[in-house]
Structure formats: structure tokens, C-alpha cells
Length: 140
Image (cartoon, rainbow, N blue to C red; front, side):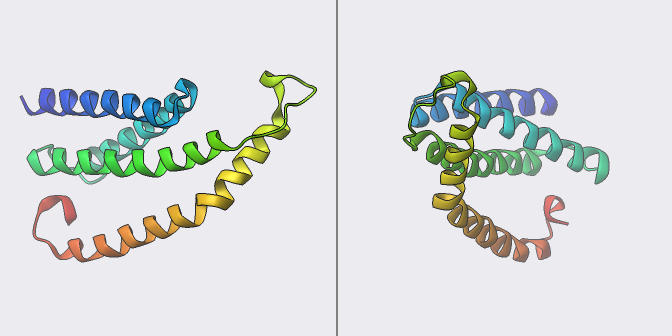
């Protein structure tokens, strides 16, 4: 029952995350990039928790996964929104092959919101440090 609960919870979180990302960015392609990144983070985290650490999936681990999914979506969606909001001059190469335009949008996103994302990640890491001393399994 726990495995089914994890599957339903992760699928629901990913589905709602895709919907939220799509509504936030208004570009399905960017929302899909966000969710692919989040799914890869979830897979890596599950691998680390179950295979590397040898933990059994319980209620605390499922709650932790939900929190980590939320953090993953938040960081990715802010970067993708900045990328998508940059207005660029159309290229002579056409919209589908504008490599320089993609590079400019990526540079814009990193310079405008990259430091805020890194600062947010740092404060999350520092605040989570104190949870290492929590007696729960997920933090030890």
C-alpha cells in the first residue's frame, strides 16, 4: 500500500506541477522542460534514499519527497519564467534554429534571477543543516 501511495502522490504532484508550470509560463514546451528536470530530481532522490541509504519508504519519506518536489519545481520554474519572458530580436535563421537567441535568453535568465535562486538554495541548505540532528530516519 505504501508503494502505491508513493506512486499516486508523485504522479499527482508531477501532474499538478506540470499544470502550474504551464499556467505560470504559458508555454507548454518550457513547462515540459521544468517537469522533466523535476522528474529526474525525483528519480535521483528515490535512488539515493532507497539504494544508497537503504531506507524503507514510509510516511516521513513520502512527505519529504513532496517537499523536495515543491522545491525542485520552484527553482526550475523561476529560471524558466525568466528565460521565457526575455524579448529577443527575431533571427534571420528562423525561430526554430536561433541558437544565439537561446543563448541570450539563457544568459538573461541566469543574470536576472540566478543569484536569487542560488541565495534561496543556500538559505534552504543552511536551514536544513539543523535537521541533521533531528532523530527522524530521513534526516540521519
